[in-house]
Length: 629
Image (cartoon, rainbow, N blue to C red; front, side, top):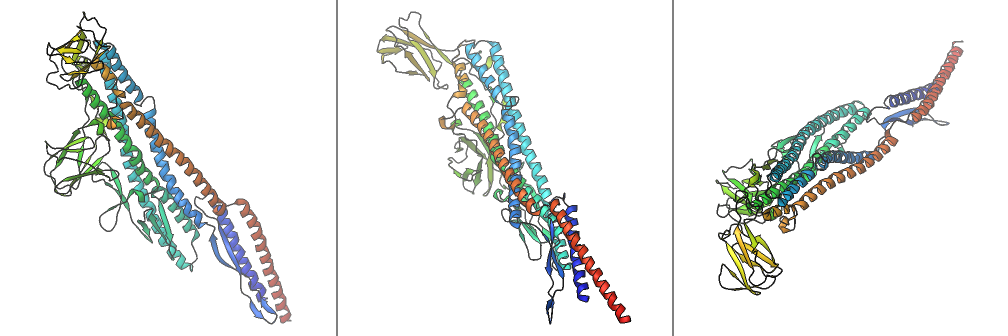
């Protein structure tokens, strides 16, 4: 009877635990991160007897969480990538919208500016056309500044979100460290049995943490979870957590980097070691925001340079050389925060065709400077010493040194980043637009031939440019300049004098006379206006193979491509994450139908065990009654 009672009692207790576990599962069907639990039962070893081994009942070995560790690891990696792509796609789409929306894009104001230039070439003496040109120049400059403001606001937003992500990362890391301590304590008090609910809470925190920074984990023998960044830097070791924070970049103090707070000085975390939303923010800044700022700045810088350069080639309505229409954006050369010397650099454009927009890092070794691409670290060819008469020449820039740098000092030169925000219209007088060429050619009325002269100025600074020149063809193969000696000529030849070139087609007749004179005030000549109107398609950039229009199209295409690429990648990662979540739910999620079936099964088993105890009690009472008689 004692065997029946002991066996029945073990069954009653086991099925009571099983029913409690089913109840716990049902109660947490909506709890985030909960993994369903199952009671693991085993039979007790029976005692030997003459008739064999008599069974001793059942025992509860453990209450096990149903978790697929392999899938959990994949979820950590997927969660980190999902967090990265979410931030990258969201911010990239915002830039794309700014540059493609009809109300904010450059396209309309860009076309309006060059259409206004075309109008001046049609009617160069029209004051209203000139006023319209200056108004369109102001509109275009305003649009450049607006877009730069949008980029600046995104830079500030990235900084703010990095700080917020660092704070949340630290909070989650500390909470995981606290749970590690509690798990170790409870395991010890329960004889090594796992505290399942605490493990679920810790796994949920790990999922949230990987969305912030991207992590890998290892479980220790004592049950604690060590957490590392994707680059292997420790965030949680047992019950101790290490904090991350933000720190200004040494060369760009307005920009924040992620650093790990160790025992000594903070250690900057390499970008490739980051994951999650922090990585998405850093990747967006490096791969989308910075290239966009450089591209739009290159466009603004090149526009100002080429328009001002071409306007200077002509003559305005006052008869003077044209002045600048746009203020040329300045080029900052930032001294490193750790510099100890007094050196500073002044940058200007030396060759617009060689300007790339890439940020340049200059380092001084105590004797000379070396240059490298600030993004890739690739060395850049550079000449000069930095003296005013021998400036440093690198990537189309001229850099003049003042002061005395010390060994180890560094500088960051940003030729075009942020330049769009510094573009302004500086010409206010419509009569100052130099629509006319500095010199003009005319054919004598008495000319017999029908040759049409085409004059091109090749050197605006030639000292003899304004010298009057008369060209007379004494016969079909010879001409004179200002009644000088005959000069041989053949059809197709170019007459080059005093910084200009003259082409004649078809060939002139003997006696034909052509006069080249300086352009005076109030001229209706449109030679320079035509060239101003053609600047957008002139191959003056990228070593003579690129134009302003190509730069604009390439920039918009690159921004759109980055946004679409990030969006497609995000959609793919969302599908992967959904599949992994479904796998987790199939393994760890609470199925109410299954729990209902278990409830019925364990309830019946519990009732049967209770009946066995009742039977044992009846037998015991019968035995007592027989003995008492």
